[in-house]
Image (tube, rainbow, N blue to C red; front, side, top):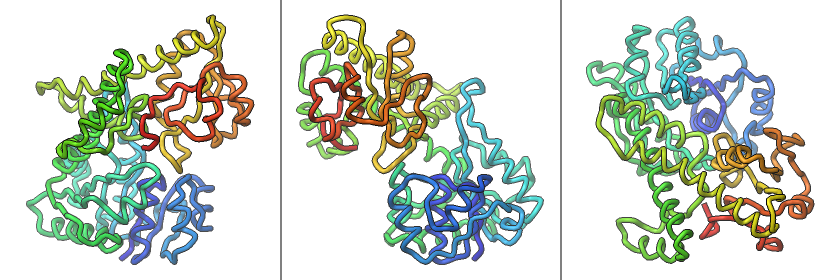
Length: 401
């Protein structure tokens, strides 16, 4: 089987590796440096598992800038290009997906295109109609940042969305689900072949549920902090109920990352003309949490300094271990609130090569950072902060996640 993968971010590259164990895979990107690194079996994204797998395994994987040639010989084409949320349009920017569809249709009208980019509910049916082709299906991904390859090798479920009325495309969808199963190490995986619109909804509702859980425990933590209660004891007591569980419950500065913020907003937009309260509340709860965190940090800084002349140190922008991605990280929203108050902010983020970010000084020396910061804001507490623990503001109760 020949497979092309458009886009080599976390989704595209992890899927390319998964499928290249057993099939000929071409990974297409527009950046020469990323193509070069993949062909040298180096990861263009900071992900320890992907780096090790590229280096240690024989893979039928070739990266290329030449999309036309790769698409022309492909049986399946996975589209995993970015779909950022447009705040003004209240809609995902799906232009990169459609650019790939148009290029594929010029090169190879027989290939089955599998959209793995996150899209609004109803999008797959709309492009099938727009481009007058049956050969577009949708398969949501459920990958955690920093664990993308693991989540492909040990998937929680495989879902492929295809229309029911065409036996040929139904069979092609079944074959694609089998390709994902074949590459996985975990073999007893539940496979769902459902309508594409329902598959799109699964993705948005699943991520919004996860965001709701984050927001819930964050609001619990806010209550405990303001009332002088021990949040960890409350959370442990709740979690012993098996219906709630002792997982995904560590308070943070808010949900962030590439998926949850945009997916919750897109789902809210999809609720236009449909009664709802919860989805809107999830989005607003995240804003409220960031404001609360910023207020508490500035309060601690004033107490430590004894005046308004203080420096806020932001320790790490990334949200996940083994990742260099801080796009839409919750701490960025907290920083905006410091900026609104004209507070001096310094940053310690070892993955950054620049000496400034968003107008704030980036300090490469951890010791210098500790010395200059009046208060240190840490979404997750690390052992290297132990010697300045009295300066640190964190809501990391369980030292994980």
